[in-house]
Length: 118
Image (cartoon, rainbow, N blue to C red; front, side, top):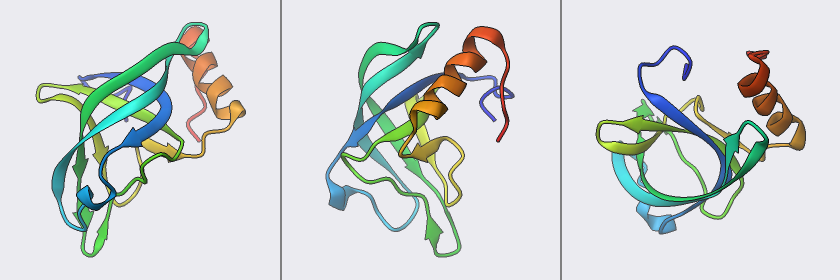
């Protein structure tokens, strides 16, 4: 998805900080801070702490969500409206509990263009 997009993306391993009650159970935009490590050619080595927008979307009664202070692998879109994370009912840019193997796979994809689509 990110590869096919006209927007740029930052890939970050980190956690979100926002008021837990701020994430609605319906479509909305919520302000949050994502803090962690951004992907570089040497791995997830660049400190990262940015204010961004969580764009929550829903399908029927299922809405996207994340938990504060929980680890995620996140694709942060550099959108016209600012740094944005799209939280849909089916995760496409936010992945919970990233493993060291996931981090290695993302680094390999960036450095050698050998990307596994699973």
